Amino acid sequence: MSRRRLLLTADTVGGVWQYATELARALAPLDYDVVLALLGPAPSEGQRGAVADIELVETGLPLDWLAPDAGAVAAAGAALARLAADCGADIVQVNQPALAADTRFGVPVVAMAHSCVATWWQAVRGDAPEPADFAWQSALMQRGLAAADAIVAPSHAYAAALHRRYALPALPDVVHNGRTPLAAPAGALHDFAYTAGRLWDEGKDVATLDRAAARLGIPFKAAGPTVGPNGQQIRLDHLHALGRVEERVIAGCISARPVFVSAARYEPFGLAVLEAALAGCPLVLSDIPTFRELWDGAALFVEPGDHAGFARAIETLVGDVPVRLARGDLARRHAAHFSPARMAAAMDGVYARLLARSAKRGVAA
View 1 (tube, rainbow, N blue to C red):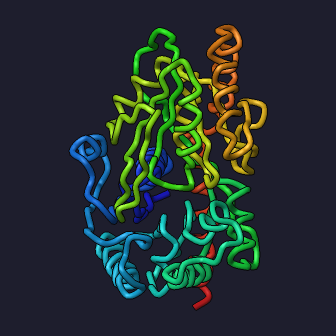
View 2 (tube, helix red, strand yellow):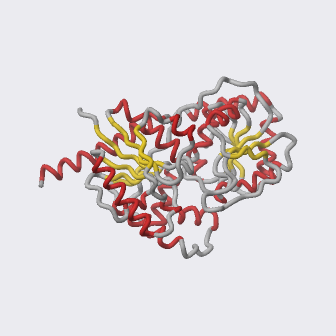
View 3 (cartoon, rainbow, N blue to C red):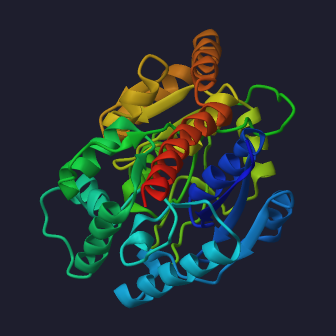
């Protein structure tokens, strides 16, 4: 079989960067040549160096949720279609479904839905009316999902949320994310709690962890930006904020096997949890559908928003080393199911189905 060419979008703002780079590498043995089309803010020098083996195109195009209006997203989609044609793509995967809303790519399109403002709002704000500026973003998401040849979600819980919010005719395909363990020598066990991600994102509910940290007698470290690209920010009074750090710093933190904690109210998958679990960190997670789906039996669960409950769960693990080590080993063994190879094989199945359908149409024409 000849090698196929995939145009894959990515960004550096959240976990899509890790997802896309892992997928690109894992697809190579399956006869795919991947062109990574980067949207949004530019990568750091460390990120550029880490993908020297991947064909990277820094497009300068905006992300849908950072774009000023629908026209900017439509223009970005049109530019991606031109890039797909120029690079000879056989298939396109957009990790922002809105980019497919008003664009004809001429090849099969997979919409990988990692998140969206509407499902974020429902999880974080409940029944409160959506802001007016969400309307055009949700409309683009709706049209992008409808235009795609296949829709994929990283968890069954998020697939169900998309199905409900956008009244999809069928549930999206589900392909769990995969992650390679971060390279770091096994370190000595240290007593601290740890969280990572977009700390400014209200959906991560880091404010609850900040209150939990005030009740602890051990440090609680938090890696990630406290200010978002649109000026969103959070003040942390008790967490030890590390700021935006490179992978080697994260690897060093989790090699000490701290208690990893996430209080997220909205999490379509949660790559930071997977990274920590692969390093043998015991897990304390908010009791939300995604985390139950992915980590039931391998984590301690706490009701969202219960800062005292999070503090108690952390103290339980820190105070009992044998239990902490056993919980960390359980998390590591469970995390092994979420491998890049398994993710790539599942995505290859989606691509192959679409390419076969496209070829049949070509023969019929």
